[in-house]
Length: 153
Image 1 (cartoon, rainbow, N blue to C red):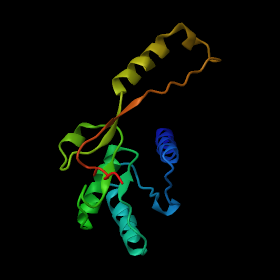
Image 2: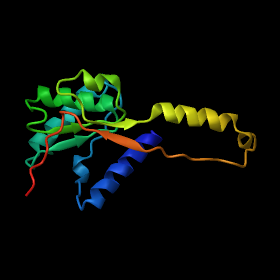
Image 3: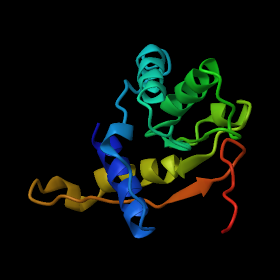
C-alpha cells in the first residue's frame, strides 16, 4: 500500500532525525487486517524471542488494526503492555479508545482529506489531464497508555 510506504519512510526519517537505528531483522511485514495478521505476527514475534538478541522495546505499526493484532499477540506470548513493550498504531480508529490499555496512535485528518479531495475534483483545474496534485496532510500524535515513558538519563 502506497500510504504504508509513506508511513514507513516517515518513521525511518524520524528515527534518523533522533540518531536512532532499527535492525532490518526487526522490521516485520504482516497483512494489514486484524484477523489475517494474527497468526503470522505471533510466529514472527516468537522467532524474535528465540533468536537470542534483545527483544524490541517498542513496535510502530502502519495501521491501528496491525497494532491491535500486535498487542494481542504480545499478550498471548506473555508480554505486558506498556510495562514490557510499547505499541503505537496509525489512523486513530475508534477502537483505540476501547482497548486496554488505550492505543497510542497517529491521528489522520480524514475529514480534511475528504474535503480537499472533493475540492480538487470539483475544481476547474481538474478538467485538465496535464495537471496533477499531491497533498500531504499533517498528522497528530495521540499519546495514550500503550506506551511507556522513557526515563531521562
